[in-house]
Amino acid sequence: MIKGNDPILLTPGPLTTSLETKQAMLRDWGSWDVTFNRMTASICADLVEVIHGGATHVTVPLQGSGTFSVEAALSNLVPRDGKVLVPQNGAYCQRILKILKYLGRAHVALDLPEDRYPTAAMIEEAFAKDPAITHVAQVHCETGTGILNPLAEIGAACARHGKGLIVDAMSSFGAIDIDASAYPIDAVIAASGKCIEGPPGMGFVIARKAVLEKCQGNSHSLAMDLYDQWTYMQKTTQWRFTPPTHVVAAFHSALGQFKAEGGTPARGARYRKNCDTLIAGMQALGFRTFLTPEVQAPVIVTFHAPGDPNYNFKDFYERVKSRGYILYPGKLTQVETFRVGCIGAIDSNEMRNVVSAVAETLKEMNVTKIAPLRAAA
Image 1: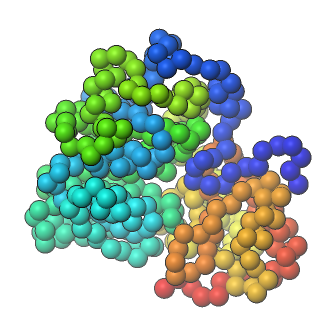
Image 2: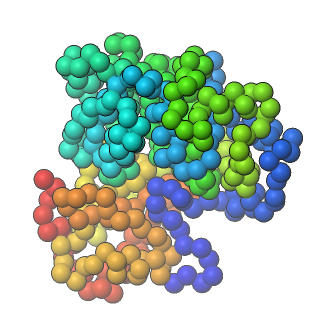
Image 3: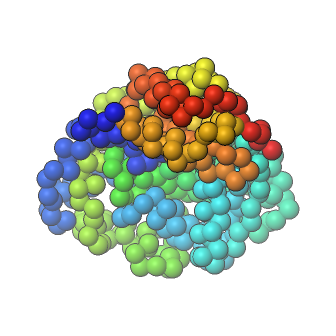
């Protein structure tokens, strides 16, 4: 049972942060303060280096959740007469399509089952069918299931055909390598409360400078205008509007810890060990993963719900929570599932404790049939 301590968040963000990151939020900052603005500049420089984009890209931070920054990237970097191909295999791909509809940007979906990823051949076939396509908007890791889409392969296809590539790297940035020097990427989008292990409240778009410089007038919104935000920061070092100062300070601290740990290779290795430990333990209890190992990202794992009549997710969730762990509901429509995140300031020992908490909960609920009612379609 929890005894005064915060529960561990096994979600794809917000996630469990370190004590050092939490402590960074204990000081108030003025948004015009020189030290605070240096902190912002430092963050922007560090984020570009994570994708090996120092020679070509710039970071534009933005207040709000990651979705704010996805919308900002699409509305700024896709011209109003552009057309976007969205390889669609999950809930966050669907969200991009919804954003494009709101923006009035022409778009087309390449629909796939939730356990399959797009290939370069599929992308190129879509280009051949519709020459009007100017951009591809690709979710790197689809956290609706945990599937990892083949970004390098898709990036190479876009490069061969001269198409812009906008990457929603919300749950992969900092854990899975993205190399903007290997193939052209117009933008990589992520947020503070994901694999860098900061608190939520700030998104960012790491945009190709040559593309950003040409996007003035594309935005549908003043608040979402990345060009205006970027040029204002270049001139003044300040945010245009009140920044989330405590979030920025904590994220600055989290970035320092990320670099000290060893950057993306080290963080990705820790998450992979977390993921492997979790899956092994849950499979020993009888659970089945929705995805095969070949397409599973080390970020979040989708498990089929037990077929036992005594199983009820809400009850299961509350009982696991009482043992110190916050799970995540499933996001699939065809089969009942739940999800367990592997990211945050946690290690594989914590994942073993999660499995123990699940085992105790199942016993308490008298759930003995762990196999799902039916397999994925």
